[in-house]
Image (cartoon, rainbow, N blue to C red; front, side, top):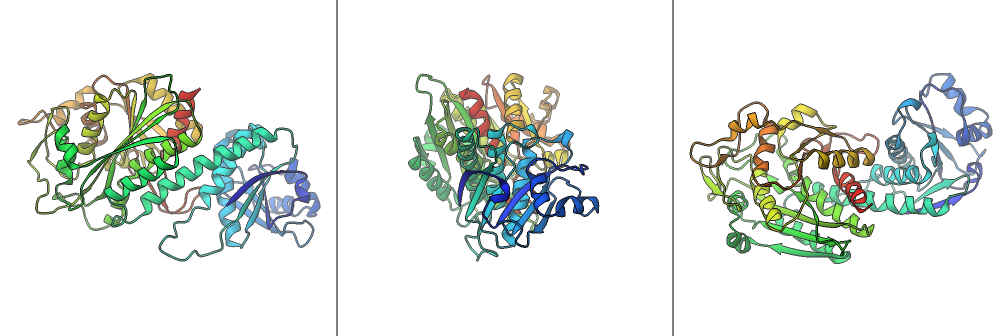
Length: 495
């Protein structure tokens, strides 16, 4: 899909469709929308006056121009209440409208939302481009597309005053959105294709296309380093595990590197502690954290950010084979700590234990991990907010700021030491599950055992990796959650 900026009057734009926006509860139109409404003889304002269109978030109304404009369709996108307006509303509007216009066989879509609501022009362009690319995403590798694809997005600059900044917004928005869609592709892939080996191949492809070093470690390497937790989880599968390490050196003058660690369970049956069959097919998405960190480092490299980033992905399948890990078994992690396994379905924290330990031995700091870790976090925060845990509040504040700027939602969660007793084992240093309550917290406390004094943030994305429906720039299936937050964090550190 081609995306380019054009300048001129919106009433003279030649494309299949033109997108404009208006705020909820405002009957007096302004700017580009007012100009279009005048040419259409008040078609938009009359629709609002009759209550046929309210301007709510994600609401889209279609007006056929009947030859009054060069475009055949005008799409009016709701931007919500002006007082609550922000950059993410532009993403939502662009995503919803683009998807609706594709259904009407529009292959060329012009968008006139630059600088709307007082938002910085570059920021609004970036959000518009992201919204369109994300909203039009369709995983059609194994089926025929239901409608023709959109071939061209035209970003309309009606003032033509900041073309260089607009081009920057288009470029940056495209890179970040396409990275998010790469993560979506990985999560949507069935697990018979997205195995640990295949994930390593994807990582190699990202590295080869960018200035990124790659190292893929196999079972023999893990044995030598004492990664008993990762190897233990992989025991039940005929697929060998992989430890994927990517390194981007955007700031060669600095010896340090931030670490992104992603849980890469390419299919999670629960192992011997097997899950119910209902919705088990969704467990192909238990590697969404891995997909996010791999896609993010690719985008950071494309953006040529002056920051050093190391990505570490422990990749394995969790299956109940004859050699599978059993409840009651004890594993020894890379840092020497012994783990009593009471539930083999609490496997994500096991493979992350070795990945985090490896990061610490490599001197990588600070660390941030993304993982579809606990159903408890899904229950606590639903399908919108991810939970964020930390041992370093200033670092968490920076991550929260990055998420807010990126339009992704994180909620800081407590990690009180009083809960530590729940994961105390009678026969090992630690056990892999706590009691019935506070499961997301005890899982975070488990991970804390493997980061030492390194500043660290754990993000539990369980329930946020998949969307049940199309909404705004989210589409049914994988969401690519976490990619935009990590890239935004990279931008912040580079500055």
